[in-house]
Length: 318
Ligand SMILES: NC(=O)c1ccc[n+]([C@@H]2O[C@H](COP(=O)([O-])OP(=O)(O)OC[C@H]3O[C@@H](n4cnc5c(N)ncnc54)[C@H](OP(=O)(O)O)[C@@H]3O)[C@@H](O)[C@H]2O)c1
Image (cartoon, rainbow, N blue to C red; front, side, top):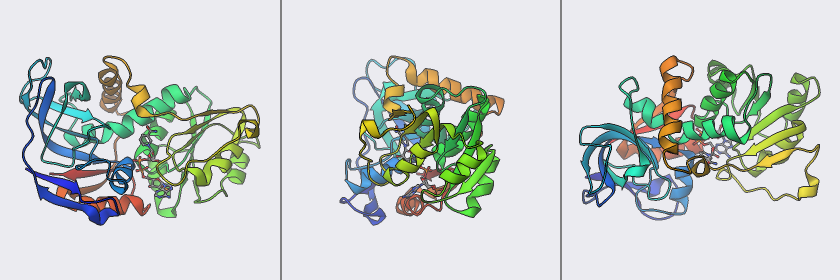
């Protein structure tokens, strides 16, 4: 079977299409024919440090074979999966523990299912747990035209919040607005603080969702109102900020959520994915595919997402 291998730690050029031995499922594992593999910003970090041979933490496909002791899945079933430990999704076939998989309902297509897993679960965690949005809350969403950002914007709106979206280029404004952002600011540095205060009558926002790293951290804190919450969820872009706790202003709360924490406990993956699939079914959540690439072009997908030019979800097709 064909798969993308990370030749060595480095830039997008180290991603090469190679012939590999087809995997076989061991006890408790499932072998899947990959129809769609999701690309996440996270994958660029996996590549830079060559954390695995074959990247890819999510996707959608069809069960080919189940290992001994697997219940609830059978060959021919449509499934989606997420696994941020073993990876291997940039391939024609993947084997992973059965606990990584969920069944995909007939109403949800493969592209939507693959696009919803990591970014959807992350957005769900941010809007329902990290800061459970209440009607009337004002949220500042960084990278509002990106994969997590577009889904998060829709979830905040569905819970009755107001969204101020941040994007780096004017051409992304329409995309963020389409996702439901009430206001969209174009900014790459710290210049958003003044406009955010203007939009909130000088008060600041109830919550900032910042996945952009250290460069925007101080400005994100500055944009909060008293008792606001800074949800810092993306250390992979740029440096991790260092903080002194007694420098935190205005009684704010600071949290660093990871999606794996959202999936603790038996059945959590299936439960949260069912909620996301249901929102897609009612039309409250719309997945926007920003780029489709043949598997062989994984390097181009990585170069594109790192260039800040992309919007929505990027997908690879084996
Ligand atoms: N904590 C978790 O469990 C978790 C899970 C999933 C994702 N994440 C994090 O969520 C963030 C978004 O991930 P994603 O996969 O959904 O990607 P994405 O938002 O589709 O793409 C990345 C976006 O980040 C923005 N960005 C800001 N600074 C950037 C920079 N220096 N270089 C490149 N892009 C930059 C860009 O939007 P603008 O150009 O418009 O600013 C870009 O479009 C990442 O930080 C990722 O690590 C965290």
